[in-house]
Image (cartoon, rainbow, N blue to C red):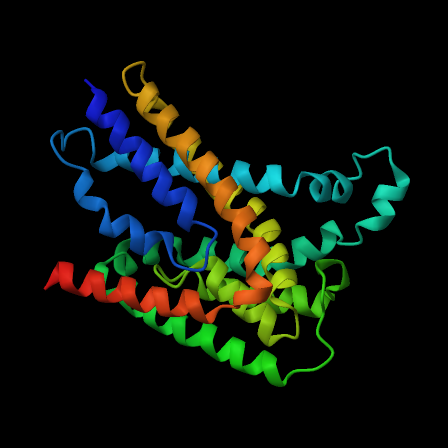
Length: 276
């Protein structure tokens, strides 16, 4: 049976997921750090139940992105009756599709390999550090760059596809999908805010598709006893992702990526200490 401690655990894990899923700091690395919270009832917090819970809280984070960018999604899908609003949002659905193609294909081809060989503390450490280096390089490069794409509405198909290629790097656990993709956008001549906007929008179909399939496969684990546990995690992830995304988007053009890169290195050191 799930008790109050399990609900508290679900809330905290949802908090970690919500705060880190879309920030360029690696949600995987943070989930490993709090992984020792899966205690007491190992039969509940392992295997299919644990995996299903992780899918549920990820869906909470995805819903937060949809809420933040709801107007853009409405206009991209041509669901708005306000033609003036449509004209003011020039990002096209076709550009998002171009962006998700590379990671979608590669993820389909190597998903089993990643699950079997790359989900370890050691590989996450590599991803955290190398990803941090990429983020610092992106910041340094943009300082010398000219003709920056300031808003996501100015993105080209070439930039969209290029960011899609960088998103493939984020398949490596610990690298961070948002960290690699935002860095890629900056290296391709976009402002940090424009790259962040496109990264978050592009993540929705990729993550929703993968999470949706996993949810269908594990639907039998949604028992009456487990439902409060899943609901607590989902709500927590949604609320904290909503706060995290809005706060991040307000800051990113001012602080750039380097502070997050430094933080990633600190997280890597914490992980190294934990496994020593």
